[in-house]
Image: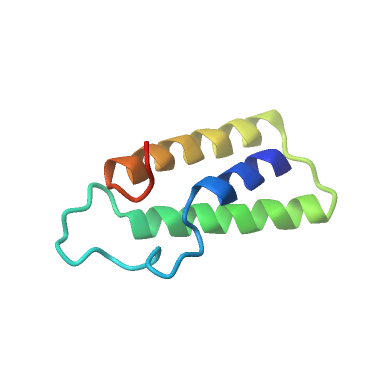
Length: 83
């Protein structure tokens, strides 16, 4: 799980100044702002769990990985990260 968290932090623009702002022209497909908030919330939760020594189950790993994959696809579609 820590490897997935580190990969997401490296690839997603989580803490850049314009990350949590809506686009001025409303041309977004899905809301990148809300998607990034969702990823940030789950990242914080799992980092806390790992720091406490709680290991995720396979299903939780799968769900988190799938969510990150889908959000990455949406961010690429919106031009927030390169393909």
